[in-house]
Image 1 (cartoon, rainbow, N blue to C red):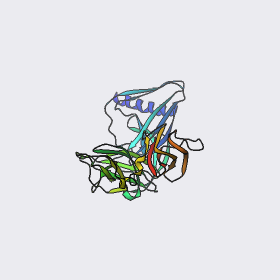
Image 2: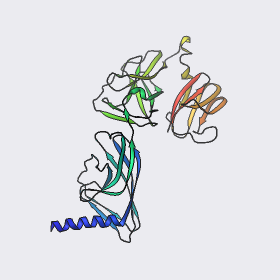
Image 3: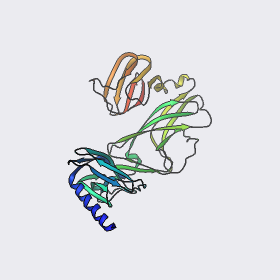
Image 4: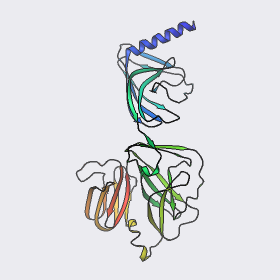
Length: 327
């Protein structure tokens, strides 16, 4: 009796696959994972019913191999009504990175094992590097307290190779003040970061110490959270308490404020004195400016009225400058 049921199940799977069409759209290609959207259309006048006894239902096969994922025993059923469609987010994850070069991707369905369905398509995995100098780093200090500072670190991969690094202390980077690291405990737990060519990401980083900072100017540097805590990006200055006359020029950047930072739809820019406020991208291209103003609200549009994309921007007013992050 068990053999008859298995034969019927295999026959039903083949029949159902003939009744439907499936389209796989890859939305994200990484070095350890590939994800996409699978659309299944029922082109018949009868409902299509699939039962999944082991939890998983659909995923992506890469080079004919399934994902390195364990599915819990959660039986469920999917029904696709006549002439309707079912949309599912699918992925393929690996413990080790895909080798650089061309790979194949195809949708798969968990019916009597993982069965391929739909057409095969190709995708490329770029060559990788772990050279920290292959990335560009940009820190924007967002808040200063008596014994801590917080900032936004934007990381960009301007090269042609994917970048990969393993970070045993959790975060990507931290801020050191006057050459002194955080007064925090780093809990072990490796986190992998992959930055594909032309892509970027941002992370909130900070410095925290038990004792308050002394009054006057201090230096802030960015250090990656890997063995040796190497320093990246340029040194920045910030001030705590009243300024001496000799410190006025060195601390010019505190004369310009922008909030909220990061922002989504509107940014308030305030300068200590009326003058010209200008916005530039990281390539140094002027996007928009206002003359004879002390405060403006930027709606994220450039001078031509077009929406500026998400990313890091530089605001300048007289001799002061500040970096802001737009969602």
